[in-house]
Image 1 (cartoon, rainbow, N blue to C red):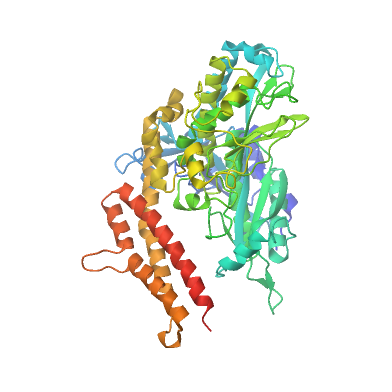
Image 2 (tube, rainbow, N blue to C red):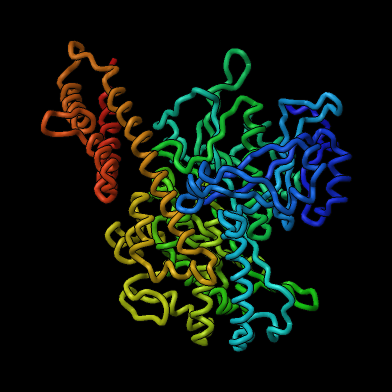
Length: 638
């Protein structure tokens, strides 16, 4: 489909090529680059695309690179910060990361024959000339704080060098943070509706996972991966995921009824660069698949009853020594007998202990929490798995945080957080995770804990006192936590998972002592946390009020389409009476008794969010039961 000469196109201006002379030279060789866009990220994870003609950018490049451009801060997600009467926000370019070109493959430049391009420059947001705000700024400050504090902890607690491959803090030149995400997404032909029964059956039979892609999906996937290689993302693999059904070849010779789930993976980067990479990759994926007539969705749970889209997030910590050698600070010196160093154990314990306040950054939408349900390899329990022994790395896919290790390769040691989805704000997920890790490392090292002591801590029994971890929790399990524990046991041992956005964000109020870890050195100020909290609540209540409730009403109305009382038997009438009862309960008001949907709306309007949250859960259960009964009823009709 793409007929351009890919080798002549510009994809990236790397971080070491950001002098004005180099930028001018590179853009001079690529006249197809017509625009420059400064890309800021608000607390909702949304990015800007304010196009500046490249001639204007080049004319006053020093000013643009130093002072950026202004935007209307009240129109982006920065509540409590950029208000209508205080909305000055500047977008300032970040010269420390790679800049990417966004190609318009539908618009060829008449002079070069190449697609018109926009140079997208990741940028910081600055409110009122001095206050740096938004997601990229928080991540940048979190990583800076982590590195500085870790170096100080290593200096003050030299015993830890008995467990890592360095002799003293004087050997270390630089702390290096690495992160990577895996991207799952569904693709389908427009206007096709999902047949949940077929999708569910295909998933149970594992008919799609790792299968060979065909037709436009294959071409789009392969072309996407080749183009992403041109950007320098170092693609590791692309494959079918567990969800989907086999596409059909229509009479016209074109594949239709495409409904498939895919995953692509690429190499790790520094934390901020990893989040920037993911942002750009999503744009490329959407653009290429649309060229083949396919819609892409990064929703966490596009369809009930089948697998949702995850985005497992990998995080590690290394050090470059002054002799040039790289060492993994999570990995122990003795990999045969120990899982991790005290730094690694402390980091993992910090994530687990503080996950109550990390989770609001991971799962901030109704859709994201719909994905986190037992049975779909999506974690619902705050628990980890280390492996049955140090010689047997774990691959327990039922836990929240996995310890990834390879025997004989210390640099592979890292954590895999399995709860994020493609709509999660990766900047804030990584920032919150590393701040939580730092809290655990600080506790472990300042208490002088050895690796074996920390392994006993993280493996503690329910009700057992610990120097750091909560008494009434279990944090490690090598079992399948879905099969080996009842729901009641999971709630007791691992903590009850939030079921709604309101329950999730309420952790900010329920665990104020845990929230303090984000405020260290003003990485997240009180105002920033309040801004995020307000943004999350606003999104939840608006989506529930204006989208979810109307969609449920459409479902209620849809469940009448096949009913004909004259053509029913007793079996049909039995189920129809149950369906009608649920339909009336959900969507029909009486003079003195409002229906469930009306009560949801009224609770939201009254800002009674606790009630709205409870009613939302009741509504979801009633809708699931309605659809179950309607499917049974429909199957018996001729």
